[in-house]
Image (cartoon, rainbow, N blue to C red; front, top):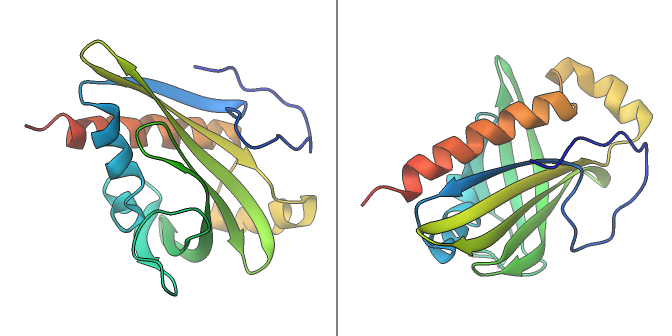
Length: 166
């Protein structure tokens, strides 16, 4: 696990693991796990907060620049976001930039490393909301680094359960 770093509003360049991250060994090939993670309509099967969604416009699957209309829930609260694929290398990396309207919300990144007996998956998150959006977004529940760690651990556990099925 990468330690949580409180670095304020610093922007990270593409291609790095963000400071809020969780990793898990999964007994399945990286390509198989990548195909599950990048199948965004199915994300609700692994994520405790995402409820799936659909590809937008001409998109039918993961590709650079493809957009996805995501559905989310936290208890009785529900909201939608748009995710744009910003890194897409099968078996290696998958990353989305999430917005609500034109307002940046977060980046979610998945990195895959082949290991004996499967792969190591690292999911990382960066909050891109400005102060005002963070404050008004509290109505949707906690969305800080501690919450992200819990959600990532659950997502990776559920992903492992699905990927490790014969």
